[in-house]
Every structure is written in C-alpha cells, then in structure tokens.
Length: 284
Ligand code: C2E
Ligand code: CA
Ligand code: CA
Ligand code: CA
Image (cartoon, rainbow, N blue to C red; front, top):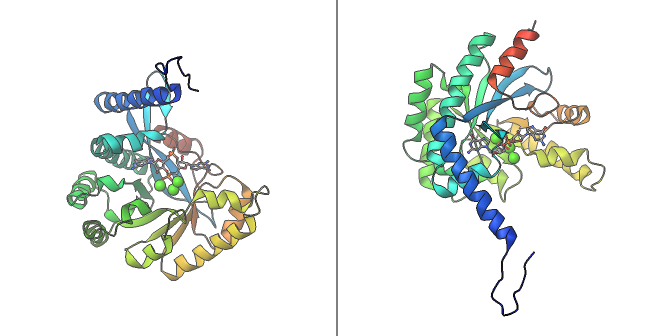
C-alpha cells in the first residue's frame, strides 16, 4: 500500500521497507549464527525406491535460533550469496555435514550410505577440490561416499574454471548430482557436457504427476519417465525429490526411478534425532 501526501511529499512503500528490514534481520542472523555456532546440517534420508532402504542422506542447512527455533534456508542462502557471507556459511556447513555424517555412520555401523552436499555457484573457486579433500581426509570419509549437488546456475555460462573444478572432483572420486533437474533452460544438454553422475528430478514434476487439478499430470508423467530413460542411457542414477504420497512412490518406481526422498519417507531432521530413531527401531 502506498500513500500519496497532499504535495507529493510523504510517499512511502511499507512493503519495500518491510523487505529491507527483513533483509537486515537475516543478515544479522547470519552473522550471529556464525559467531554463536547456530548453524547445523539437518539430514533427509534418501531411499532406494524398490526396497525403501536408506542409501544416503542430503545435508540441508538450518539455523538453530534460540528464540525463533529451527529456521530453514529460504532466503538465507540468497542473501548470504549477495553479501559474500556464503563462503563462511558454506565452509561452516561443510564442517557440520561431515561431522554429523561421521557421527551417524558410527552410531548406525553403516558405512555404505552416502552424503549429498549442496554447493552454491559462488563456492566454486579453484581451491575448492583441495579444500574438500583436506576436510574429508580429516574426517576419514572416502570421497566415493560424497555427492556434490549443483544446480544449472553453476553450469550456466560454461565457465572453463567451473569445468576444471568439476573434473577435479570427478578425478578424486566424488560424484556430481544435477539438482532441480528439468526446471532450467537446457537441462538435457548438461548431461553430455559435464561429468554428471546423478540426476535429481525436481519436486515440481513429482507434484504435478498426481495432481488432478492440473491438465499437466499426464505430460508430467511422460516427462519423468522420459528423463529417467535418457538419464539411464547416459549412465546416470535418477533420484526423485518431494515424494509425499504412496501413489507418487508407486508411479516413480514403475518409471524406473532409482532413489527418492520426501516427507513420505522422512523429513529433514537433526542427526541426534536420526540416531535416536535408529536406536528405537533397529533394522534387521
Ligand atoms: P533443494 O536442494 O532442492 O532441497 C530440497 C528441499 O525440499 C529442502 O528444503 C527439503 O526440506 C524440501 N523437501 C524435502 N522433501 C520434501 C517433500 O516431500 N515435500 C516438500 N514440499 N518439500 C520437501 P530446504 O531444506 O528448505 O532447502 C531449500 C533449498 O535451500 C534447497 O533446495 C537448496 O537449494 C538450498 N540449500 C539447503 N541447504 C543448503 C546448503 O547447505 N548450501 C546451499 N548452497 N544451499 C542449500
Ligand atoms: Ca539439493
Ligand atoms: Ca532439489
Ligand atoms: Ca528445489
């Protein structure tokens, strides 16, 4: 809402002001989060579609605010990217994710699961592969257990520096997942131009597939089935995200999707909670 003063003086835009205030509050929380150690890596299990068994976990950033509780990334990441805080947030997040992954693996006695980590395009600097390798060595985690999730934004300009970094990850034995697949401009073309191992079908397709409100559900099903077939031909594993219903699970399974994640199986949760749950119902 805007109010025009009689002589054109008092024009203000509360929504804009709220926006800048919210932004300043988030910037403040990021700095507080870094200095008070409020950032944590929550884990969402990734399951094998055929069996429902856990094959890995995606690490998702959370800010544990003492007054406001658990804050999901939302605008936090984009603001950190704009202010340049993403380097420090990203490094802190990597430490938390690796530390939690070791704790969880030790508690469950399972060393076959993998850990998927989201990286912002702005974290892609030449030193990144060495930095990650130093960290995984320190935590005693084999690179083969780490998946690096990138989005089309990272590949967009076909930057030779990005290509060098991805090739280096590939040589070290890390796997690369292309996140939010199908939402960009030329998703398919990235599959043969970059060393991609895993395709993550965006949750918007999974939702549209079984949504009776949209005419697109038939087409979404064909798209998901087609993306899965092409990805397999390109020797990629397919992961579907945002699975919330049994119907979606059954359909995706019938299309040959390998792995999936979503609220149907588990929400992202703290590693302490995951460990407590495993203790409560041990797997056979
Ligand atoms: P994303 O990488 O696509 O992650 C999946 C998002 O979908 C997560 O939101 C997850 O909580 C949510 N999700 C999982 N299953 C379901 C479901 O069944 N239904 C619905 N509606 N949502 C589901 P979250 O944790 O809020 O993260 C949002 C985004 O923030 C992520 O999207 C990712 O782009 C970014 N992000 C999260 N952690 C990091 C990080 O450590 N670094 C960077 N650079 N980005 C991150
Ligand atoms: Ca992701
Ligand atoms: Ca995604
Ligand atoms: Ca997404």
